[in-house]
Length: 450
Image 1 (spheres, rainbow, N blue to C red):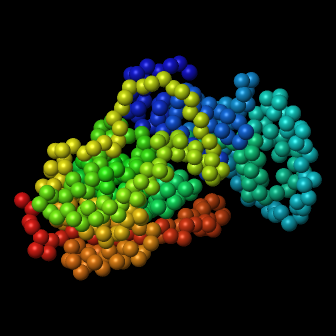
Image 2 (image 1 turned 120 degrees about the vertical axis):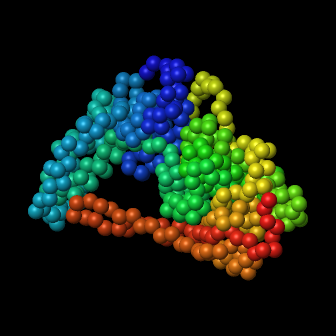
Image 3 (image 1 turned 45 degrees about the horizontal axis):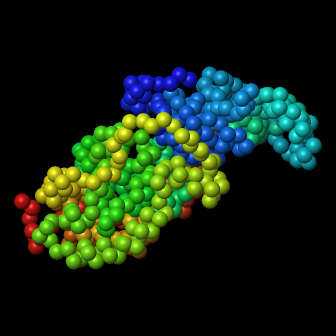
């Protein structure tokens, strides 16, 4: 593939449907069996089974493209699959026949091809699809199976001998689903429907100034920034000297304009100078240990994070990134908030608040953050457990700081929708956490804004 100049790379980066060199992608291998994040460069490689395949063929392809592992003279490589070349006989495959599997006996004698025969076909350069067709042709029981069993057998062999890779665009839903499936503890067991409710309850819209406390590695910050679309600000505040890590934000492929809108500021800087700071200092002291712990477990880059997860878990494929030419320096998300913006927030307040801090006391952080909101501004707090939110809700009612308080427990269940076999999935998550939402008010004793 010819080397792209800077103008071509810029035009591709502006088109979110086409990948470009240096962008982050989500690789879905074998229909969700393995999920990993990778950064596309000419030297990046992905290990699928026993094969190391270069990610070079993925550069310049639309998101949603499918690839299949093939073996050529120079070794294994990823070959793109076009929609017209697959699944042309779906009606014939799904044709319901009056057959069942009662007469079939699984005694490992139905397959005539041996392991040596398959290895010999691989050495001769036979493609994975041809191996699958050979296995079907040499199966003594394939024709006797039902259409459903035949399709299941074909998919099983295809995943083993011709694994496929789906190129997905990293956005809020795909990133949250990938983390929740493999490493839910890193995002506080935040499910995608819970995340969508958080954004809805907080009324995150264009040109909003959203205050967030994101201790979930940046999933909340990235989701808010994606919905803002380069307008307004998302300020990730922290109760200490060091800001919380937002490694997940790097996977969103945000433009420089959007990255400018992702800032951070300490809680002490956002509070009015006339307010008492003793409670803030006490809260910062309690957070020091938590901040240091987050720094120790955080990873400097997205690819290092994924690789370490894969080494510990063994379910996700490893990604190797080779040295690539240096590109022009881009704006980094999560820089210090501008002085003018902080001054405006002190005078007018934030338009909404989202808190996702499982390591902090919900009421302790809310009584410091709520005065930073403008009056009638909505807020939403996420926690994996109910008790901290119930205590926070009770205290907010006593102090008369908010109205329309409610605790919501989201519940989501996926359904399999296929011909003649539609039913709920047998395995699902038991809980997606809890959300406390409400609207900030004044009780009359608080000082009125200018």
